[in-house]
Image (cartoon, one colour):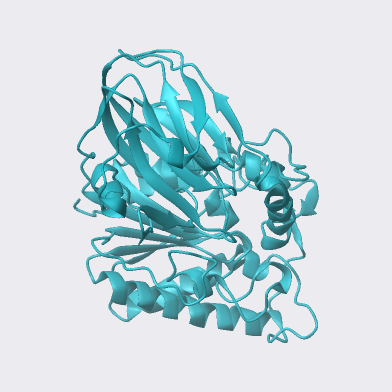
Amino acid sequence: MRALPPARNESPTGGRRTRARSGWRALAVALTAVTAIAAAVTTITTIPVAGGAHAATITTSIATTSDSTGHRGHGGASDVLSQAHTAGRVKVSGDTVQYSWPGIYFEGRFRGAGVGIVLNDSAADYDVQVDGATVATLVTPGQATRWVTGLSDAEHTVRLVKRNESPWSTSEFGGFVAVPGGAILTRPAARSRQIEFIGDSLTVGYGNTSTSRDCPGDQVSRTTDTDLSYGALTARGLSADYQVNAFSGRGMVRNYNGSDPGTSYRTYYDRALLNVAGDVWDPGTWRPQLVVVYLGTNDFSTALNPGEPWTTPDSLAAAYRTAYSDFVQKLRTRYGTGTTIVAIGAGSFADDVQQVVQERTGAGDSRVRYWYLDGAGLDFLGCDWHYSTHDHQVIADRFGTFVDGLGLGW
């Protein structure tokens, strides 16, 4: 009989064990706290720009969107997408674009001594990067135009990236705004390489920048930075556009500790807006050469509870393998035979993932590959024993080497 691991994670040294709150229960506590204060709290952290020909000290100011005096044009959301490159799942809504998934980024170019960023988001945090350097962190910015000023009057790049999760909320981006005398320039070109990362909190980057494994209150939200997750790091290392379509606490068939029965990660995968039931995202030109699936931690990290549909660990494992194979087929149908799908196995579910891959390749699908995520050398110093930024970099380095050997021909 298959032994189901207890609701604990073991450190890589085989020593102390602790609760594996890789999941929705831990995140839900943090999210509830953030929701309660989001409307009242708006914080901006500014950082001096370091290096580069246009280095300057950045100042910021806040103006409501209706008070903005900058120049963005009048093309509505189509204007937003014409001036900002994004690879994330977004939906046009009036004169903005809406989105939910973590790690979504918008990249633009402008000329002038500053730039405005039009946002409507009281739930998520953002980093603002100018000329490749992070110049500000926006904590639940609300509905406002945020200004980055004090730059040299020259051409610059700007990148806005959503740091964390807010699956209960819809975020809105209204575009970049030029300061008087400046101009928003043609958006950067899309990259020819595309990678999609699918997973749970370990893929989100849950609490990865924390200095402690104990993260009470809103500390999970404040210390989660998807831009420093293994997926984002791997993609940037390969000069690829990417999506991080990850949702904490969700599993392939079973969520953390059996929470939200009747749902799973697959309930939400097709959506652009996670909190909108029935929402369907249009992939458009999104045709990743590589899709990476890392789901299973939440399925198996806690013991089965009375009343769950699986009576034994073996029956859960069988359901997991069936659903996994169906999900891989869904990806194959969506993206075609030219896409390579990598299934990541780790811990107690590694053999199940490998079995799914073997069955797919045995049936003639040679572009489904297996990668074992070895926990050696990882410190699990993120919130609730999740991966730290050190761990994400280690995983990105190892996985990047694996990808280099896949022969993707891109």
